[in-house]
Length: 481
Image (cartoon, rainbow, N blue to C red; front, side):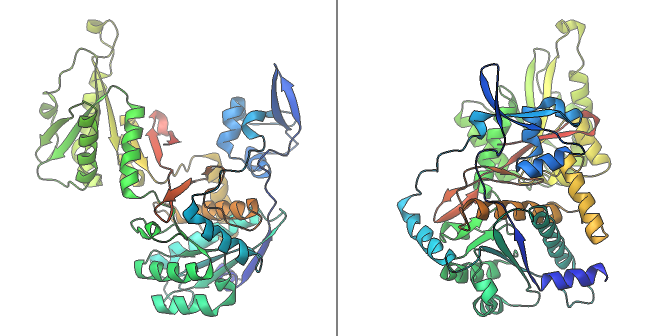
């Protein structure tokens, strides 16, 4: 059977799989080391970091944070330890605000009548002779979703996954599908695509059904403010700007911001730089603004005082590749010159220069990507695609083995987005014994996405933003702000 035929069959089916009941403590023995208690896992023959991560249901980053030597590989007999106090079973979180109690009551009543389930209403275009890019991305998301489901298939507790092809359906048509298709109508969580009209219609019907809407595709929609069943999985812009500046200040304390503004080029990030300027001014720091013509010149930077250990962080007013190419080379030269220790300053740098930029830069490839590493640039982003990471490589390999094709390159990578979304939803449903809990006890850190929801208006928004650092040698690191 061809891969396409397999996917068409799967997309029309209801898939059941087993998912374990979550314990918030690790299911491991405990030992005392130097007066402190630790959970420990003894590595078995043939086990990999990825395998241990899946079996223990913790991220590879967590394993390495507690066991740094594991970064060089693990072998049979190695002991991996985890602080008991950090991983012991936690007390339930406090009750949510009074205005959300009715929502929980409705969900609790409905869940008694149905198996916990997730319904994907995506435009797969399975009847199209020539699927569009939109169709292919939706299918990649679903493929990643299935790989995650398979990785959790040996656990206890039945969860139902329903997939429906919505290509060609109007908002009203999808609403009729949700009401007439019993498997979709009973879903605990619904995932619609990014069309705003469809998203709003889906949210209305889902609220009537007592189903949560997980909005992972539409970045700009603010429906969560008025609908208590909507989760906005992408950090909204107003919160993103605030967290980005928080990340900038945490990464470069005591650095003075320098705004690079082209008089003739793109200024697509003016809203962000305006917010940044206001923030710094409120804190008593006056940003420097450098205006340049078509291309940034070395002479444009000569107005900056150097020679006394000054610290500058450069922030451009555009995130486009074209504008990046107009200032990046000069910044590299300027930064390299200042970062060379000088005998005139007792071996200290004459000045320090850093660069802070935008999510758009994570899509750069080729020379532009090499320049990001040379600049050791820092960016903020809703997603962190580290294809050199161990976990990402494993998922990419699984994807190629399952479907005979590579993940589609995009930002975000939809196959990885599907994998992370499925893992988060499945574990959440399992942890609540079938009841979805928007305010989960643990922050979820996936391959590419972090989900950390908090109450905002009537609904919920994700509060996890990545601060990514490009390093020399082609490496990347990231933290969640």
